[in-house]
Length: 410
Image (cartoon, rainbow, N blue to C red; front, side):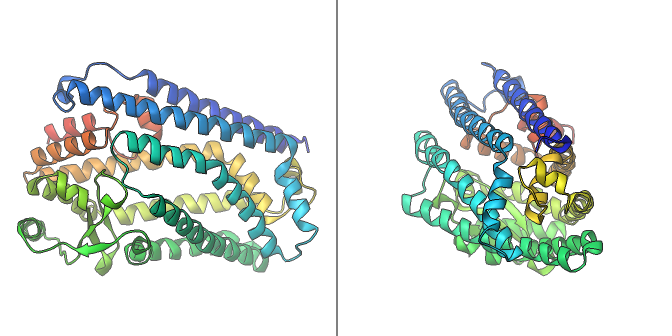
C-alpha cells in the first residue's frame, strides 16, 4: 500500500488543503471597516455590519465542513478504505458495471450524509437569519431527492458509457470519451432550461408591458433575435436575484429571476440583459465550450495513463486494478493540475465578463448597469473587498469594484 503513488497522493492532498486554507485565511483577514470611495454609499453602516456578519457566519460553517471533509478523506487514504471498499464489494458483485455504480453510489451517499447537516444549517439558520431563505422544508427535501436522482441517472449513465468504451476499445478511449462529453455538453447547453430547470422551478414567458417592450427595443437595436424571455420563480427559494443566458441557436433564451424584476428598475434590467446579450455576441458560450473540451481532452489523456495501474490501486488500499479505483486515484493525483486549470478557466471567464460589460456600455448602459450591479451585491450581502489571491483562484467574475472601474473607463 505504501508505495510511491501513495506518498504522492498524500502529499498533493495535504498541500492542496494548506493552499486553500491560506487563501481563505487571507480573504477573511482582508475584511475592512471602511470601503474605498468607489464603493461608498453602496452599504450604509448598519447594512455593511450585516454583510460582514453574514460573511463570517458562512465562513465558520465552510471551515468546519472543509476541515471535517479533509480529515475524513485523509483517514480513508491512510487506512486504505477506498481500496478495501472495492475488495469487499467484489466478494458479492461480479458485473463490472454494477460494481462501479455501487462503489460510487456508496461514496456519493456517504458524502451526502456528511454534507446534509451543513446544508440544512446554512439554509434554515444562516440564510433564514439574514432574510434570504424562502425554501420550505418540503421544497428542500424535494430538491434533495430530485438532485440525487438526476445525479444517479446522468452520472451513472456517463460512467457506465465510459467504462463500456474502455472495455470495448481501450486504445481509443481518449477520443471516444471526449466525443461523449462533447455531445453531452452540447445537449445539456441546449436543453438544460427545457429539461432540468422545470424539475425545480416554474418558467413563464415575460408578460407584455413596459419591461418587455424595452428589452425588445434593445434587442432590435443590438441586432439580437430574441424570441424567448422567461421569468423564473427564484423567490420560491431565496430573495437573491439573478439573470442568465442559456442555450444555443434557436434554443437560446434569457431567463430573469422574479426577484430581479422586483429589485431593479426597467432600465437596470435592460442593462443586465445587455450584458447577457454581450456574452452571445462575443460567442462566449461557444468559446467556453471549446475551452472546456480542450481541458477534457487533456484530462482524458492523463487519465488513460493511469487506467489499469495496479500500483495506483494498491496505493488506495486495493489489490486489483479497477476502472473506478483508477478514477479516484487519478482525481487525487491530478488535483494540482486541476487547480491550475480551474484558475485558467476563471481568468478566461473574468475576461469574458469584462467584454460583456463593455458591450452593454457601448449602448449607453454603463450607469444603469453599475447601479443594477450595486443593488444585486447589496441584496445578496456580497463581500465587496475579497483578497486578490482569493479572487485570482476562485472568482469566475471580476469584483464589483473591478467592474465599476472598467465601466468608468469605457
